[in-house]
Image 1 (tube, rainbow, N blue to C red):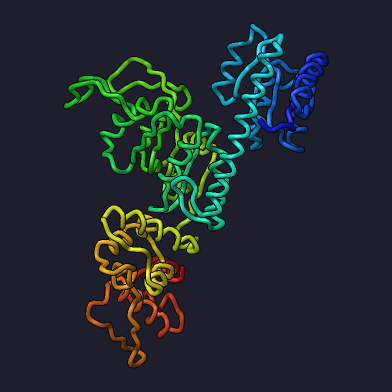
Image 2: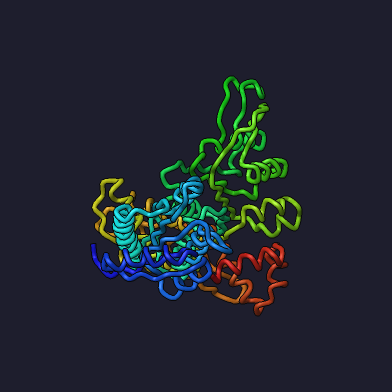
Length: 454
């Protein structure tokens, strides 16, 4: 064990502070002392210690409050609590919430030395984990997430901050951006990582069955309910429950979900028994949640209960610098799955991937790479191996002001794009006139132009 580690002792009794400090100094480490939680927090914020030993009973804010404050501010010190016999239950509770160990007053010197040594070993391991995690971020990989763009680095930072807290998280983003991957990463980095991760898509299940899927049902609750069945909340007990596309949940079920979140108990469909549940809830949506709130289709109380912390996953078009790394990651995985020796992309193929607007985001990119791997006959993916939508659109030059030529086989999406842009150009950029000529609404024209110009 390396010597010279910084250890913060927090106790309102001066003899105990001094006694612990002497033992720590005798072990070759650097002790610091504080008489209350506020002083301890100020000391830790100046320079985070490797280890914190705190009494549970402190004047003002308690030792548990200090533990919470340190975690909230991202201080990764290993935590040990001091407790009297009467507060051992609280110490055990603190241990379950992330405190490494606890010491019973009066502290035995041998026990103190052993716990400090073990705690510092854990602190060293945590430093190594954090170092490796930073290295992963620099290499563009964070658990299953891939990318080193500013938007993704911010997502990684927020995940590290919120994952251990247990707070409810609302993940927003367009379809295909990887919201479920973010949710799984939150689960793996949480204190519930050894528990189950259960995901349910609220938009993919008929409204008549969704309540049963989430809350479970008792035998005979409805036609076909031949046995009792646990729902997703019970299946996720001591773990994490992802409610995907939460904005599509029917209003009536929203009310029942809010009750479960507030009471930590549920009643199965057709049941009378209250069942305790302990699951961290993560919700996700690609819908404009503000519009749902304004129209009353989504309950404000539920929104505020779920939206303790928000993670907004950026669309792929806003992080194009991540695209080569993502594409190569998918290529390595899919080539191995298909038993092919494909090492990369041709320059032209990669150029087409980078310049495509990817309305389906990361999911569409993976599907495009999968298709390319299947049809590829060379050591590199060629532009011709890519799906037609990703290939370069043909150069369609007008022969005169009111005529364009479209080669046979041009994808319809490309034909539409060229016709809209050429009509707009022919009308001097007048969008109202262009929409009228094309027989579409001005709103539709604006939406399509926004996509084309991304």
